Length: 398
Image (cartoon, rainbow, N blue to C red; front, side, top):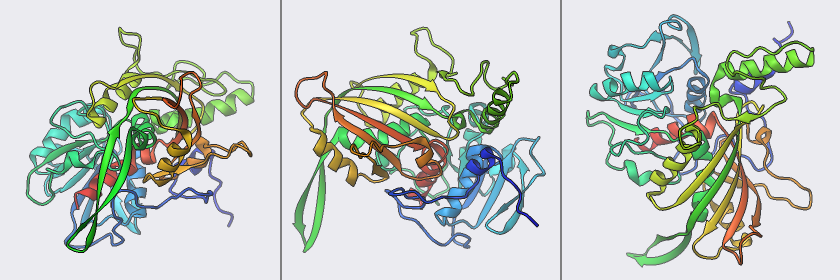
């Protein structure tokens, strides 16, 4: 029997990995990978929104990284309840999400939309669960850590697993995560100083916060709007090539062979909500209310990986060679910056990959001296931009 033919969409959202030079699919960054999964003394897990694109990726990342668990609940809407899922060779029934779903759950991974998070997130916390939420519902709450494990893990140090106390931890927006994975190592020009203490080398990290202004232009994939948007992009592509009128259910205009301003609502200041997320979240994550950030977010007909053009202005000089070396050593970052062969990061190359790729590293010639840099960043929106970052947060609780 011939194997089933998968559509382009199906191939991109499955857990299948394909090798790419210099890119790592299953590599630990700031957190350790635990290679034993099902075990009695491990935490119990619930995945909320398990049938969505990010929910399915939660399962893929949990398996890839060997995240330990003693039990796992598959939760979704009433419409999806009763479906069957296979996870690590075990069959599971998808359960309808209710207030009682979190009894005995230690870690709840949420990716079911803002309204679900607002309703059930506090309920889960009240039942003693630590919630890692992928929506924007709690990101700007002063009492909720907004965490990228490679950037600001210290903000969740007070949250402990196993003490019966629930808590909320927010996953940043995908475009913010991808941007700051590359910008933060340059924002913090780190110098390692070895200090001898009881015959052990202790490395203290000194950081100069040097970014004073950041200008970001994003080129965002269909996956950011969910699995239905990815399916519609594939459908539209076929329809346009066949000379048919494209189906526009998710977006109000043709997406295939087109690009347009991000579909988030436009605010009175002229920015859309996606752009302001990047502005506000950067300030919170960097703990710097004074850093100047502006963004323009564009939706492009790419399936699952975002690209971003980032212009950085520094308080102190930083030359491009030093910046390149800093980025090469940064966790979760891979540099693809081959000028002679004109090879730089692409969304296709980072799809289904953990690392964020950075290239086009060059001095901003509009500024005197080495006070500005331009970089180009690509990252998988579903993986590091959502599911992987959330699982890394959960790993820090172990």
